[in-house]
Length: 264
Picture 1 (cartoon, rainbow, N blue to C red):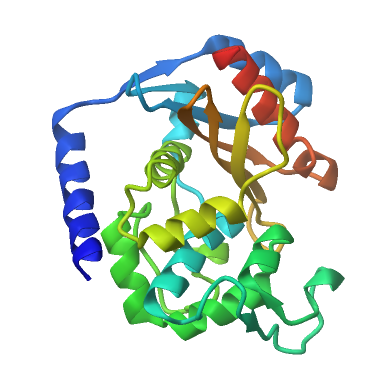
Picture 2: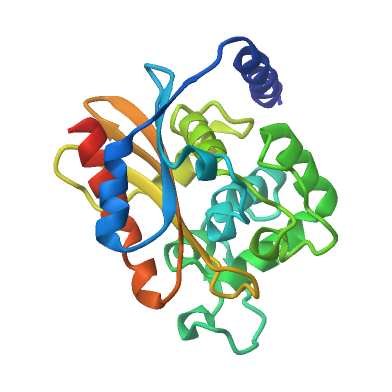
């Protein structure tokens, strides 16, 4: 309990400090070449935590909010673990028995496996277990995007009204990388291991995708997380317009190209 109170106070101090010390935001024109080469429209934000500087492609869009899609699984899981909605990341949750858009989702699954294949129905079950009151409490505590949950507890991150910008995503990923979010140390370390990617020469990446292919509105693709390079974390967020399935496959390569330009 003491640790949670401490992290709550730390979160409040974070927001108070953010209003006093303005982070430098820099438009990096050379990043446009990567988006042009990929043939997609979107934005990229990289938060250099040590320098307190955000480098962006398309600053206007970097501040525009969109539904977070499956990137919200990061927070859904940590809220679930900290509230006791699940015992841990290995507790198996039911998918509900109904046909799914992706056949691989049609089985009961734990949160660790579910985040790997972005299993929507399993994480919807988790959200229903958490409930609106506890979910809203943590969304407010974290300061997640526009903080709006609406009335549908198992769809708000897919269809809205919850929305968040790339810059806001990068800031939250920076806090997770530094374990400065109002969650238990156990939950944040577990999440770190759940989203760690295969090793890449020169840095370690922690990331989660999101894709609104189940949305009736415009399809947005996300990739958010952070890398650790020479002991220093750099948080990032990418979102792009997805016009066909081939665009979704471009997210990782586009992030790597942007990181190469900015950090290597």
